[in-house]
Length: 144
Length: 372
Image (cartoon, rainbow over all chains, first blue to last red; front, top):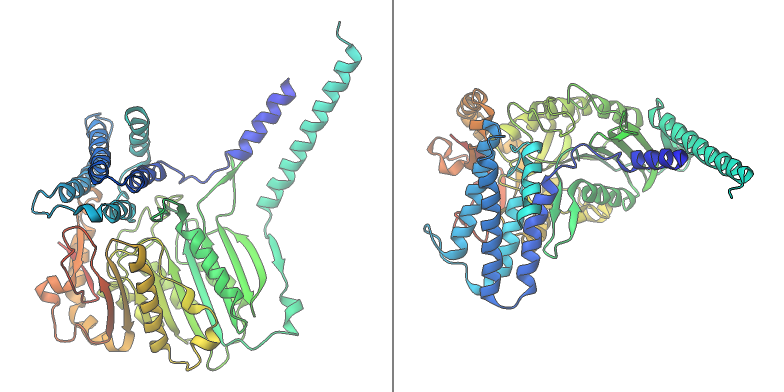
């Protein structure tokens, strides 16, 4: 039995020889990619809008909870607020508010791609720390 | 009733399995920590049958950060792995080239505690892999010392007329501050000065690179082009954001055909055009690719240097939190940068984002600045 435990421990050590930067950013990117896939999977424009809206709303709620947690630094707060503002811009464009023209039904699929690509741009999340990202991921898992 | 003999045999068997696993682990650890790990080094063998080197290509691929992206089908890609595959393909498909590839990887550990090498070097000659070695990247400074050493010890003797190209793949290279560029070494700084310092050492025999390709976001600023200009004749960079699918390397396949006329500026424009066409096919965010004729942009760079440097000094004094709110913009949107020489020596391929506030912006000067 002891031998099996030792074997298991060594095996896990091999498995866990992972890069240090395999943090929460990947999951955050995955979140919008999944939403885009769901948008493309349906033909109905109203459903597409609902999926996109829901993904923006859920993420905004999560970010609000992180902001109100009191666990974050000033630099994280600025990073999260910037990220939230970027989301808000996209939601405004989707619905046609804040000076935006409403995204036409025929363009909802490419709009979903645009959201994924823009959120994946290198500089978008650079200032959010690993701890805060992990907090966001936990809330995604719990609330979405 | 249990058989004590069988229990003893079982216990012996387990001990042997454990022992062999430990031995394997030890061997792997020792391999990982050995001073040099030549996976393959055939330089002696190929000396006799080598072809003349007409193209010398150097790739530096930064992978020590978040480089995940998705395509429009939802497939996941790691940008540095894709760039590495592209560079290897270029190396294999050009029999008249020598190709150096440096892959800067994230730090990882063996058995939690033992750090593994975080750089991998490939040297191809005449389409064949000659050397593949793991190495330690600089732990404190990031001026590419180690990469320069590899380059100098492997490169073929320089022939007149050899076309040399340098490619950098990674995130935006900071123009100031620079901490946090490497996820594994958050305190280590890397700026455009460090890249320039590396380039200076790569060209120690005073022959400039013919072409430098900066496959990063916001590479087309007056400062970055000014800093890297002394080491190359032509630069291709993206003044705006560049999607992580990077510039397309297909133009480098079969260089003896695509560079038959040895006209590097014309080749650079074809490369930029092809990259632009490839990017606008699937990317909905801004796409910008610019070709800079280093000699011809000097006058403009000199005219705006003081203004730009003053902005950098101001930004350098700001806190990290306030810096994250600073945005880039087209230099043409700032009156001080709008000069008659602004378009001289720059060829810009630009398409605005399909959505967002800037979707109606139809042109880009090719120069990106900081919006203070």
